[in-house]
Image (cartoon, rainbow, N blue to C red):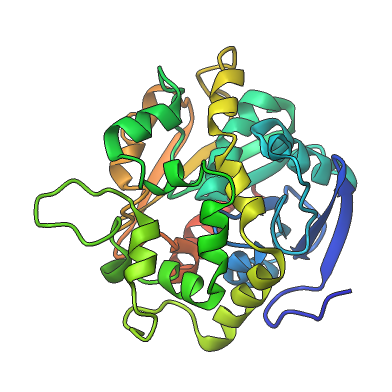
Length: 327
C-alpha cells in the first residue's frame, strides 16, 4: 500500500480491463457519480480540489489514476494504450462500482477520452463535461501526419512518436519537467519562444532543454503539491502517458465508422481563456454536432484549469450537476 496523499481520499483499487486501477472516491455513494479523467502529465491528484468540493457538496465523485499513470498498472505494449483500452478502463470502473451510468469529466487527454465515450459506450454515459478539451471531429487525414506537416518534427506530439526519446528527455530531471509544464499561462506559452507574429511550434522538447529551472516565476504548485507529482513520475517514468499519444494514428484508423454526433446527452464545455494548447477557438462549432450543449469560459486561466481556477471550475460543474441531475 502507498502512503496517503495529503488532500486526497484514501486510495482504492479496482481490477478492470486487465489492469489494476487506482482511484480516489469522495462524497456519498448516491445519485449519478462524476468520473474525473486527468491528462498529461498528470495523475488523479490533479482533481484534489474537485474531490474536496464534491465531498463538501454531498456529490459522488471519483478520480482514477488512468492506465500508465500513478498507482495504476503500466502495460508494456504500446497498443494497450489505444482509445478502446482507455475507454474500456472507465467502463470497467463503473462495473466495479456497480454503476450503470456516470457523468464523465475530462481535461486534456482525459477530455479526448470522455468525448469518445458516447460514441463507443453510449449506454454508460449520463453526461459529458469537457474541461479545456473540446469535442473534435474526426480529421480527414492521419493526425500525426497532419501535425508534422503543419508544425514540424519538433512539435511535441510528433516528437513523442519516436520510441524512448521523449521518455528519456522528460525523465532526466523530473523536478525540472514538472516545474516547466506546471506553470501559469504567462510563462508556458505554446512552445519555445517565438518572434512576434510567428506561428507557435509547440516544440516543448527544445523549450524544456533550454529552460532554467531556477526561474520560479509563474509556478502554479506549492512545493508540497509539486512533490506529489515529482514523486509519482520519478517512480513510473513518462512512457505510459506518452504511449497514449503513440496510438493517435491507430485511434484515427479505427474510428472511421463511429457516430459523428452526440445527441440525447447533456454536455458541458468549459473553456480556458489563456490555454495556448487547447484554445477556446477550438470549441467553435461544437453546437452543430452536439444536441444538448452548454459552453462557459473561465477567464484568465491557462491549461491547468482545475488547479489554476479550482473555485470557479467547482462552481460551474456543481451548478450544472444541480440543474441537470437534481437530487
